Length: 224
Image 1 (cartoon, rainbow, N blue to C red):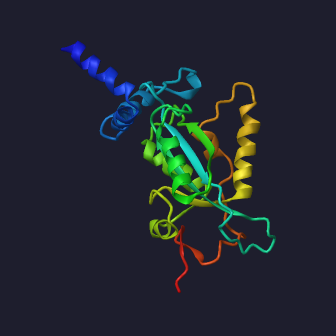
Image 2: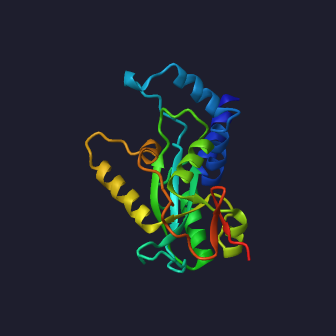
Image 3: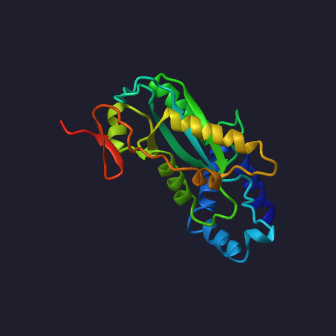
């Protein structure tokens, strides 16, 4: 019987869609995260004995940017260009060419909008962060931009109604510069903890695109 179960498990891992489903189940609050919390409660980072999330894949947070210059800007300097970004989670490998969740999102954004979508970052979840992956994902998303109301997403015709933020090209450049700078540091692991450690996106003093407003921390259309 055990051999039959192992055979089915191998089949799951060989199919990217089924593997994604399995990993999502594994890391759900009802199963995986409770186990990780228990393990991490008996482990400290200072001990140097890190508990890794060995589930045949590692949770990653990725950020896909819509490289579209069609978003108008009213910033007087003329230097601020706004970008729509989708920050999501995948619990399987992000290796190029594997048709993983990140690639699927990137390709669908390009297909639906007719504009190229690029990857700003794809970072592993910090191994000592025992919070649910969805909480970490939300923290990273709201750290790098202003959440976009799903009705606005629907109105402008973006695929996937949730997980979108709006941020500026200067801030995107800053993120890229910090990742590149620190990735070259000896022994430095770039993970979600690194992103959460850099200065948070601050929209104050920056003009939002016309017809948009910040309402309770969420970007919505201005009332007519």
